[in-house]
Every structure is written in structure tokens, then in C-alpha cells.
Image (cartoon, rainbow, N blue to C red; front, side, top):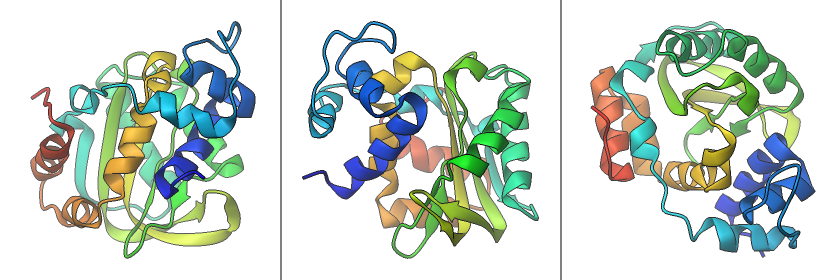
Length: 209
């Protein structure tokens, strides 16, 4: 049986690839020429084997503390613009994230503090990165897997990933880290962008400065 982390990551992988292709890519193939197809539960046995490098995708410039936004779209735009300014994504990324969030919401109902992980397809990404925002006032995101449910979200993490990073388990590790309630609280309550960055670097094991 899949754990909570694995179940949530499965939604994200399938959101990127589709159920069968997600398994194939994580098992070492590609969307077009998978090396093998394995049962969905086995995907995470493969994902766990990879050593991830989330810290290399972090930067204080991509963190926003106390972002003021009136809606989920406003949060998405602010983070997407940071990623664009830093050269990590294409101009199409922002619109793609908003469109994807409407059809495949990414709100995660973690105990005590819900978060959201809006993202776009790899075609809109130039170089992998992760943008993060704590919000001055929570906004509503719809819940992943239950779009009729609205969650009050005060922390938003926007992964901009390429095929390679997705296939080597970055999503799995990111969701796993965010299971930590103490980390979620530290990120949401951080007073500065640097504090958000340092909290993430402390748990990722690597920093890019």
C-alpha cells in the first residue's frame, strides 16, 4: 500500500505524465520509449533509489516572504514572474500554470497548514528551480484529487521541473520534506526571503547561495 507521501506524489507524477507513462519514466524509460512498465505501487521503490538535489534548485531570489495576493492566480503570477526573471522558465510558463491549476488543482491538506504546489508541463521550463512564497493572508486553492474542496493556503511551493528532475524523484522528495509540520510552519512564518531559503537548505542538504 502506498504511503501518504507516495499517494500525493503519485497524483503529481500522473499529472505530468499520465498513469502508465509516469511509471515508465520513473523506472528509467521515457514517455516515448519506456524501458519497462511496472505496477504503479512499484514506481516508488524506484524513486527511493535516487539521491535528489533539491538544494541546487533553491535560491533566496526565488523566495517571497509575506506575499500579498488576493487570489491563487495572484500567487501563481508572482512566483512565475520570479522564475521568468531568473531565466528558469519560458514566458508561457505563467499561463500554463494557471490553466493546469484550473483543471488539476494542487492544494494539499496537510494537518495544521495546507499548502499548494502549482506547476506547469516541462515544455515551459528552461532550467529546474523551486520558487516558494509565504502569504500575508491565506488564499483558496482547490484540493488535489477533490476539486470541490477549497483549502485555505498560506504556503505555496512552485516546482519548475524538467523531465530529468521529475524522473529522478524530485517531486517525491519535495512532498516528503513538506510532510514535516515544523518545516511548513517555519516557512510560512519566516520574516524574510533569506529565512525561507535557509530553512529549505537546512533540510535539503545543499545550497546554491
